[in-house]
Amino acid sequence: MDPRDVLLDICDMPPESSPPGFLSTLVSRRQYYFGQLDPSPSSTLTVACAGREECTPEYVLTRTAFRYHAIEYIHSGQLLFSSGGTTRTLNPGSVFTYAPEDHFRLEALPGEPLIKYFVDVGGRPAASLIRKSGLSFAVPGTLLPARWVHDVFEQLIHCGSLPEQDGQALACDLSRLLMDRIRLDTCQSQENRPERYQTFQRCLMYIHDHFREIHDVHTVCNACHVDRAYLSRLFQQYGEDSPFRVLVQRKVEYAAGLLRYQQMSVKQAAAEVGYEDPYHFSRVFKRWKGVPPSQFREGR
Image (tube, rainbow, N blue to C red):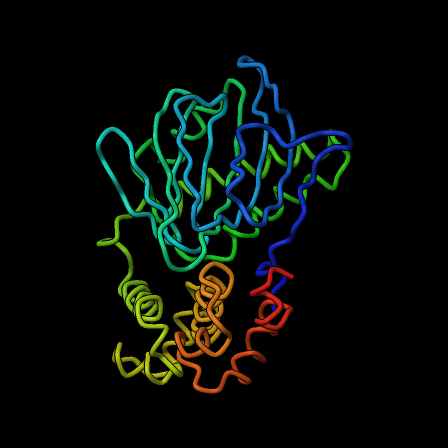
């Protein structure tokens, strides 16, 4: 199991501190880095907070004022973004930004649990750096599925384990790197992507849309009219994992939501994601989540 797929029930707060009020309480698991929470508007770039959150099905967040500039990235699940009469559904890979003056509402959609990363930055250069990344409020971008996205956010969170000054310096460097990579990876329109990428995206979307009834990668190859070797090469070039691991992860994450939030039995959840044998499903689930589905269902 990839350690990046494990959500830790920790909150890296300084001793004798309480979480800042701007964080949502509708989060079941979370991991945070807290840096300069009170930056001066005229200071150099600062990182106030970065984190990874697994949101509850009831997750709703309304912001009418915020003191930082923020970038958020959808790792899994779907998020409804509403602002000024406009509503957008954000899928995995979506990245968006907002500033202190922006008003909006976020809402988790039913299905796979919503897991998202974010970083909140302040200081004089924050607004211009985000503009240079190509992001603008209420116009979400889509990043190529790539390991670097998760690596940068995970390293931001890890800054909390470093001495305060070193952690803040590294967090600022990582935030600049994040914005540079967003600029490079979202600057091309879908029409300008290479044909190989278009094929990869079509195969990936097929897995995302049909994972419950797909039993093996051969089904994906037949449906998308590619051979298995070519499919593997596409996922090596553009993806985070092999097509089989992407398929299994989709099944496990969706089943996890059914177990924890809809309180389905293990047998029911297994059947919902295409496993006829609940014992085989339990073995697969434990390999990914570290605990059997029966324990996960009870929140243990």
